[in-house]
Amino acid sequence: MKIAVQAGDFDVGFEIRNISKNSKIGAVASFVGLVRDVAMTLEHYPGMTERAIAKIVEEAQSRWQVMDCTVIHRYGALRPNDQIVLVAVTSTHRGDAFAACEFIMDYLKTQAPFWKKEQTPEGERWVEAKLSDDKAAESWR
Amino acid sequence: MKVKVLYFASVREKLGRQAEELELPAGVATIAGLRSHLRARGGVWAEALADAKLLRAALNRDMVPPAAAIGAGDEIAFFPPVTGG
Image (tube, each protein chain N blue to C red):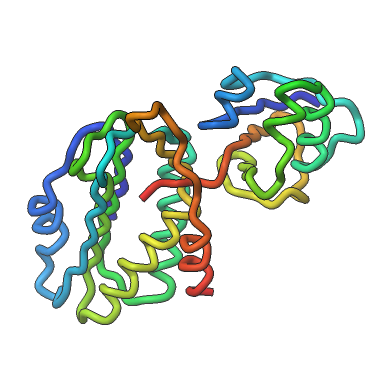
C-alpha cells in the first residue's frame, strides 16, 4: 500500500505498473482527478492527511478483496488540466477493484483534510463543499 | 489544562491565526465547549466559528463530532468542510 501527499506530479502508468506485478492480480481499477477550468491552490493538514487516507483505505480493505492500493494526492499550486489525485486498486476480479476505488474516492472527498482555493478572474475564493459529496459517502453506509 | 489549537483554510484566514497554545478554564471539556470558549472572544472569533454546519473539527488528527471530549496536551483543529479529491 502506498499513500503519498505531495506537491509534485505523478506518472499514472508507472504507479499502476508498480502495483500490478503480482500474478494473482486480475484487475486494476484507477481514478485520476484533474483540475477543471481554473487554477487553484490546495491546502492540507500535514500529519492528519496521510492518516485520514490510510483509515479510508483500511475500511475499503475490510469491505472488499483488495490486493494492493496506491493513493496519491497533490497539494500546492495547480493549473487547469493538472492531475490532482490518483486512486489505483488491484484485486483478483474487477467487481472488488471498481467498488473499492469508488469507495476510496467518495470517502476521500468528505474525510481527507484538503481545501481548494480557486483563482478566478474575480479574485480568489474557497471552494465550498458539495452536499452531493456527503450523499455519495453516506450511500456506502 | 493546556491544548494546542490549529485553524485551516477559510477559518484560518478569517481568524488571521494558524495555531495557538491555550490554557483552558475548567468546564471546557469538549470540542463544542472549546468552540463556545473561542467564540466568546468576540469579533471575528464569534463570526468565523458561528455556523456549526460549516465547521468541522479534528482531535489528535482524527475527525470527531462536537461532543468529543478533550484532554490536556490534545491537538485540536477547526476547519471548513473538506474539498479535496
